[in-house]
Length: 260
Image (cartoon, rainbow, N blue to C red):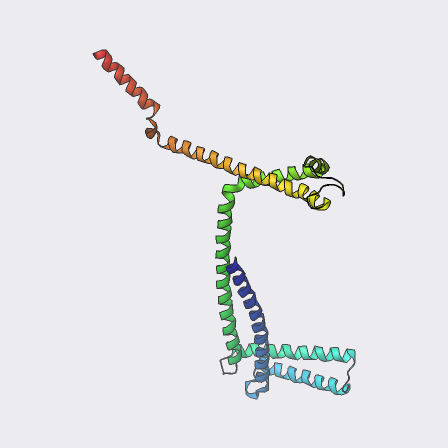
């Protein structure tokens, strides 16, 4: 049980670590894209068009921020956030394009984060396998304990339900038969409330426990008897031979007596 809890804790910690690494990876890709767009020598093809688009968005950002001074209105603030988000998406696109290009060394931060992500994913897979193994072992132990006691457990549940229903509808009679008072005044073991709870829950539990104990021993006796019968039937020669062999022996003895 403790191993399972530790395994789940480690898996949850790794999951949080992976989420943090994915955020770091996204930030690193955006920074790589920003560097790529700032490098005039790398502006070819799609990267060049992204550089023009990013410059236009940055111009609108500066114009919007300058037009409203230090205290922009709600609409202006939303406009600034939209422009910043658009610029970030442009940087992410440029960063992904840079990762698809021949390496230049600028992508080392992204590659390092991805290596950490791969290690965390591998460790998480190992923990999942370990957790599944522990779950299978626990289930096997529970099943091996429950299977031979299934009749007793069923008897406990059924007896408790019947006894609880009977005790709930005959609480006063049971208290009276035990020499206790069914009113607040009179003799009590503890108090009327406690005595009532003992009759309605404790007494059925006691009866159910006795029933389960007897059922368990009876089931063991029956199981042992069945095993002995199966053992005798699988080895008939050890119990005096088969009926056909006995009949053959009697026939040979009769022939021998007639010949004499």
